[in-house]
Amino acid sequence: MLASLIPILVALLLGAMAPGPSFVLVTRTAVTQSRRNGLAAAAGMGVGGAFFGTLALLGLTALLTQVAWLNIALRLVGGLYLLYLALRMWRGAGTPLGTAAGRPPATGAGMPADGRAPSLARAFVVALATQLSNPKTAIAYASIFAALLPAQPEFEGPPLLLLFLPPVIFLIEAGWYSVVALAFSLEAPRRAYLRAKGGIDRVTGTVMGALGLRLMADAVRDAALAR
Image 1 (cartoon, rainbow, N blue to C red):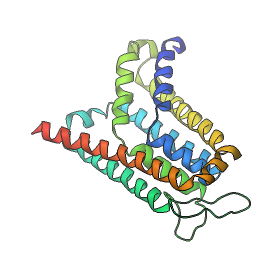
Image 2 (spheres, rainbow, N blue to C red):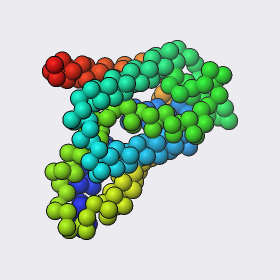
Image 3 (cartoon, one colour):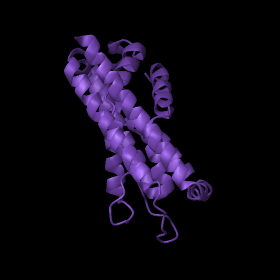
């Protein structure tokens, strides 16, 4: 079974490593908040990935392909959420970072108004919401499974897949983003960020906003084609 699943695991890892809003958010969380917050965000990405993977295995992604209005509505909501994060990043771009215990607190997306660094729970929830903001991820998982899963009897039926693949997806997603969080929480990236905070915040906010607009544009286009 493991040999047959290796292509699936490779595809899932490559999908997790693809640049996107998740990468932007985890990177920024690790740089502007703390290593622990970055790891909490990585865990949120892992939970979101496992959720989408479970939906794909259960066949619920058919709702997103057969019920056009639901797919479009979810993508519009997801796009608006990404635009909200982008706006928070732009608004925080001109705010200087203070120091707390020798480490800069967060600004921009996910930062409370009183300037205190967000909690681990908040970092987790913001990352989870970001991961879930793009329902096309569930369809991507379904496509991978449909293309690469061997015949069902080899796996003794769907229950074994439901027990095996979601935890593996969590480990892949959370593991990759943990590496990202650890790398970008080092002092060198942190100091580089402090030197160019305004520009970096605006660039990352622009990237996040562009991803949100693209998601919404795709939804509007599909809505027009469905008429």
